[in-house]
Length: 488
Image (cartoon, rainbow, N blue to C red; front, side, top):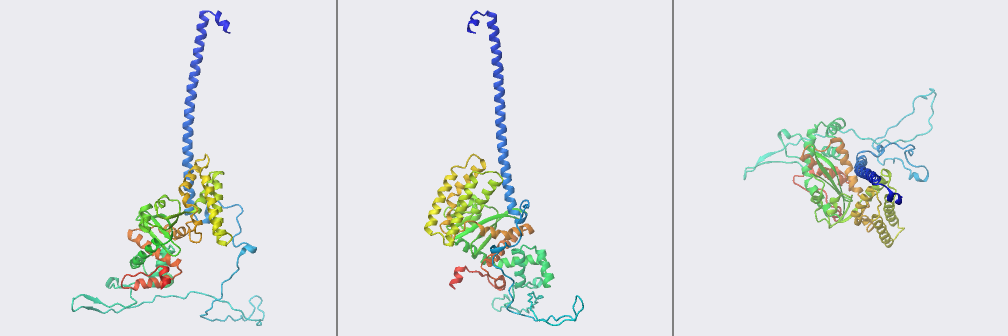
């Protein structure tokens, strides 16, 4: 070919040069078109990645809402082969029991044989006797007390003075002379604050079952008065939580006057304090615990909790395990999440073995060190998936707080179940009532809920506590800390 160009004419060379220029121009246009296609594909790829990330976030939000709002039996589609309801057969059934026979009998009745067989009208002869016991509630009607109050005036200062009977709960007279007693107020507080029953239904229960007529507005005023009397006790409970060695906090949304606020719960083994606050940040948590709280916080992964730099932290393993299951089930992440799940489960198994006496304290310490090393290696190798990298970044932040419970497994919980359980009655109330209409209603809610929840934890009857608070003529603290009570 080279020899042909040596003998080619000038016109042939010009024609070949023009042809090659046209070919170069064509290739240049194809190259530019390929560049435009490549850029367009890159933009489409980036757009799809953002869309996938947004859809994954929406899926996570939907998953969290489902767990927060739905009852366990209504989450997701029913299984094709559900497990038979009730206890398991065989050795897994557990201890068999029945209702115990009452020790005290109030009434005795006899059930004689009928005159004839109810089936064939034949003659009956007596073959023996048997006993059946029935426990029932008595018919309760209101006790109406009338206090004739002596009124006088001081000869020295001229001030008005009136008498007060120990059974009175108020000094009000005139239009407010008809008062509710402590038993009725206690029942109303339990039904509304602890059980989540609306005040209109509480009014109906008192009317239909006890013959006590009171309007929902009257109950509101009675509960406000009870909360005012319980104010010093609420302050003492907050101080007890602040001094506690281990506290589990959590928060949930709450409406006050239609505006979003947050209901906080701070739970210890024997005390729970609720606080309705305008936000869910560090400042709100520190207003109850104190910014210098130096105990152990068993909490979820909400970042403001990590600002308690003087506290010892334990992050909730149940939240981490749930996130692993979500990555496996919803995002098909089969590399990173299952390995994290195994490490966390091994930590719980080690705690259980220690508590059963199958592992020594030294063995538990060694196991904790191995688990920390395994988790550290996994965090550095999350893989290419965005959801796995996000989870690894979260674990890196929470790493110092993952295995704290293995240092004191009998004192520190591995999950924040105490706070989660403390929020459940409030969630029921929120579903039924929607929150509070006013700031005073929110104050009453947090005070009475704290008092009733703490009484439940300490296995105490609310009636004598409310009776003492409502009949007192001066502010008092009705609940001492369990340690102080034990000393006395």
